[in-house]
Image 1: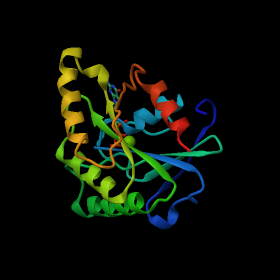
Image 2: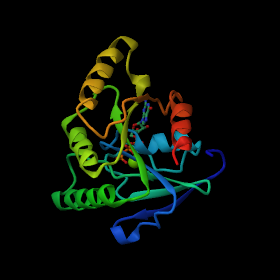
Image 3: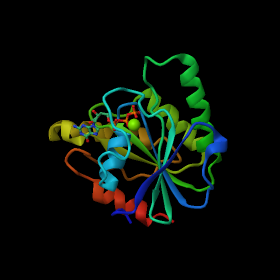
Length: 195
Ligand code: GTP
Ligand code: MG
């Protein structure tokens, strides 16, 4: 499903720009700079597909990628970055809320968590939104290559404890490194298995 079958479809800035809800859809949510675009690039094996950058808030649209004939991968705008104008942030939040609450074809949200930091309060906000929208979500730890094995246990314990409080949380989490490739095959098979 993931080899040679992926393309950028469009960037969406308003609800009426969404493509028809006629494919299995998964989205990637997470704080700005957590590694959403890098993860999509790693999953699809296409380095330049989703823009990845050091500039927080670079991905400002809801970006749709087609995967084969059956799936959409959706790169959501990052949340929780400090230096964007309030009006801009509010507009994105409103769009994000409407998308998450109203998208019938959305099968799962992957909530990306920086493995160095664990779950922060802005992550809790999005998880609450997913709970109330009844969108099953799964935590994906990113940048695992930056965390020493001895520190990872603590982060995992914190993440598991917090996830246990969220009714929409899928209990298994995935540890990934877009840099080293850890967890990428696992995540591919999770996505391919959704229908
Ligand atoms: P926004 O679009 O701004 O919300 O950011 P994003 O979540 O899409 O993050 P992006 O993929 O652009 O990555 C942000 C930075 O983290 C880039 O400098 C990436 O190279 C780096 N990065 C992403 N994933 C990994 C990883 O697995 N390991 C390491 N070491 N760095 C990573
Ligand atoms: Mg991005």
